[in-house]
Image (cartoon, rainbow, N blue to C red; front, side, top):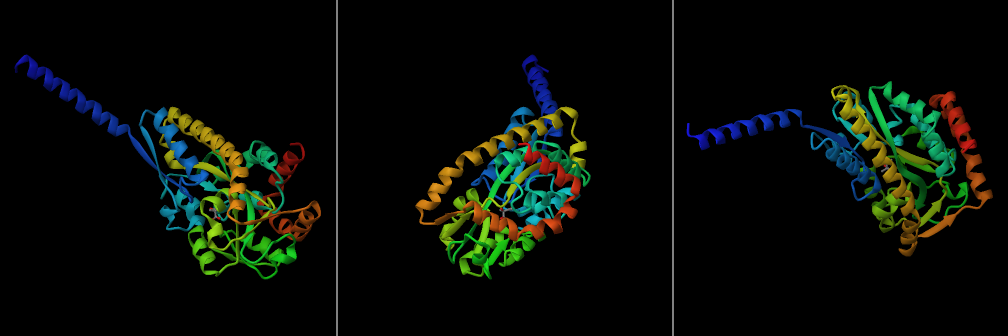
Length: 334
Ligand code: X2X
């Protein structure tokens, strides 16, 4: 061979080897979310993907699939799908995973976590570790926390400031049995359905109300489907959890696991801060669009607390006394 040709051949061979080794190592993982990147939740997943892409220099791509599409819209099947390996990873809601991980119902206990500091004390403390252990015992590796937010109540019929106002109202709730109990206890008429079905049900008036964080109400423009009354009652917070299927996790080397974990923690912290910062402007925007916002006096709040005590009696044993106790003391000493 001529010298230039030999050189070219060698360069091509080198490039081929490099390409083969790159593509052999490159890995794409599916990440399920319920909400898209129009919402903080979807942005949390995209941020995770961005950080991982950057820090693995493209070796690991997290491909985010929003709108529960990997579970045909049924968000309560996300955890099972991740456990079985049908999906590799998820940024998921504690509510949606609670049918398979009963310990996660901790966060849905009505009026148990009164403020952001209480949420942080629980997720960042012993109770949070116990919850992560409960997830890990079910073949899913939890990596970090995010936040969907405090859930507020909206409806099309009138202002709600006492349990009696909920009497007979049809409320769309997520597909988690605890929510059925909470709204039964309040005298409402709850119906469990997926997020995919919620907006149509609100639009047609099949249901009178729903409950979701302000970010969801705002971005999904829930006011446009007749939800003109919003009660700020902070009755529960819905943390998000970044997690990976166990077999996928074990197939990664130590360094990449560390990158995935650190990126999840950072993306979560970033998203939690953003979600909280945006709350007041979101509320202002919602009011601007003509929604009546009701805040509760202490006495009104206490009436809701009293009306839902039975939910605690029923659910604390299913969550586990030890976790609830750890959470309670974290909240008290926050
Ligand atoms: O379905 C809902 O209400 C949502 C989007 O908030 C959750 O996935 C828990």
